[in-house]
Image (cartoon, rainbow, N blue to C red):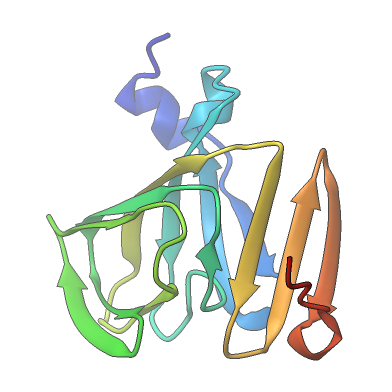
Length: 152
């Protein structure tokens, strides 16, 4: 399906605050939902200066990627910080490295964010020492300290 530039401009942007980080606030237009995509999420996000896009995290099963359309920011990838701007692309393969972005310029950071929509995923939030288990629409969050590691 075609979603024209005019239709994208008219799409309502939903304000989303990450459930683990009140400083991770973005305006989100779900382009994928608008055209009926079920297995991949495609989002046009806008992050105001000083805000983060999400909590620092990594997925065990889902891949995701980001294309910066405009604005400036810092991408924390692992323990390194990288300046990002228009035209930059960042990819996070399965079981990848932890990451997050912060808008740092004087204007909003605008990105196209894409990722898989698997029925199951495990997401780690290393700074918070928490793990999210997602299965068929149900979410379970557990502290690392409460995870039993079983040797087989």
